[in-house]
Amino acid sequence: MLSISSLPRSWRVCGALLAGSGVILGALIAHLPEADFGSGGRLMAHGAMEMQMWHGLALLMLGLTMREKPTKLLALGGCGLLLGTLLFCGGVYYTAFTGQHAAHVAPTGGSILILSWLTLAIGWLRA
Image 1: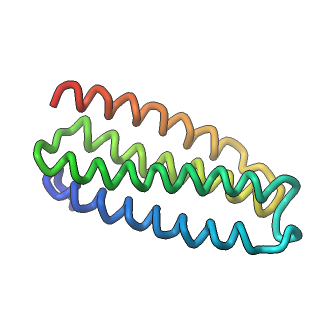
Image 2: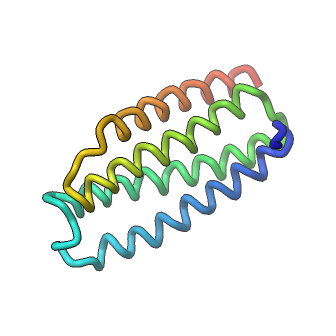
């Protein structure tokens, strides 16, 4: 089981994995034929890849800042960043490649991301 003190390393690993897989997805998005995407899918997938990369970097940064003073609010914010990124980007990738909407997956992920950033802001103000 993870403890708050072990989360900084976990956030750095998760951030690196998100960013690294974002590079792979960026290459795929750039080189796959248009037929592999739904209508407007390449642009949509590129936007999701950018969100994935930025939030991967954010988790790396969180992992570095939490080494000094890990708190429950920062841990909660990090959990939300990871979950929100997976849901938002996963939903957008699904739509981009299939042309079908994944119900409320992307909006739910986006809402979680917004709440996570607010949680992190409060956590850093209190730290």
